[in-house]
Length: 521
Image (cartoon, rainbow, N blue to C red; front, side):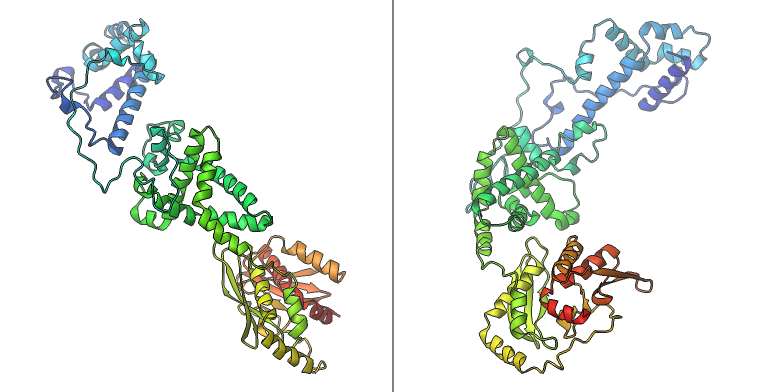
């Protein structure tokens, strides 16, 4: 060991021991109070107090022990080297004195010498975390005090598994794996003494990832079999509703997972994000089940199928509704619509495409002809038109109005293209073109391609987009034009979204194709 190395080593020992640079003669050693017997029960951990704090403390002790042994093995001088430092004239008097009298320094030197002479094989076992103990050679532990009976308010084990109205919860037999299911990542936030690959195996994040993927696969298999005529979009919507955070959190709470969860999340934060946290625990439980069953999905599939039976029945009723008539708006317009008076579609409730449906009303002169509800805005509008087609009285009334309308005054009157974008679309406002994409018209990444195909197929025309940036409003204004005539307009902070919405509002009003032809010709 170099002189600088020895000096650094001594300094670190002083800092760790809380010592000073005073001379050895003035050093006082504070004696620690120790019980008369190392087997005194008062020194042993008590089961009643063994929990998160105790676990952290002992993990930290073990890691500190390993780090200390590694430092001694790699850096400490041997006893012979330390004795040689006492007479080395190249060292200052302080270093010589410490090498001769510092009991901690001499202790680590003795340990280093014993290790190099193969008299401390336990060091390697500790460093490799591979310490074997023959329990038969150990003396009996002192008789522990009787543990208090657990309170009924603090359930242990799998007390919550059998819940009325729910299928029995499959058991996770491995206690370590079961414990890990309920261990949130936040409990490991301050374990800086653990390596990353050790931390990742102490909480439920990895098995939650596995459970999420497996559950999606299992639910997909169940739905594919249960709904043989559902298309890909319908299957995706049903699956999304079944594996949503809201639904999985409901299951987790029903089985009591929320009471077993261990986390260090602020109570307020937990309240706002509890659906996600509890849903993650449910996914982790599924992942642990699959791991323990050797990735045999049969038992988990049967359990999830029974658990989700009621929700699937509801989804089945929705699926069995009358198939959507893609031409419903066109059919309705042909019966009662004119350029001056035509059906208007008003969004009464915005959905989210997962578990909250869109609701739309079909109106004529503020009179509700029909209402529709569907997972997508487009389908909700079509269902509203389908409902209106069954309204015989209103069809008779407005059908007669259509026949009595003077075609010479039924003209399309273009609106002011400087519309601020806060109104409703042209199809809903009583004026025709350009159709204005209001807030209910959402961006659709396929809309531009669909618009190209739609106009190319029906009119042999390619739509163009006129783009302007309004600095005053910090947004883009995009007009979809046919033969230099503005057919639709959209406003958005994103140019891409504005173009998409301008195309979307036209595609949502395909029943106005004849009017568009009249407009551009």
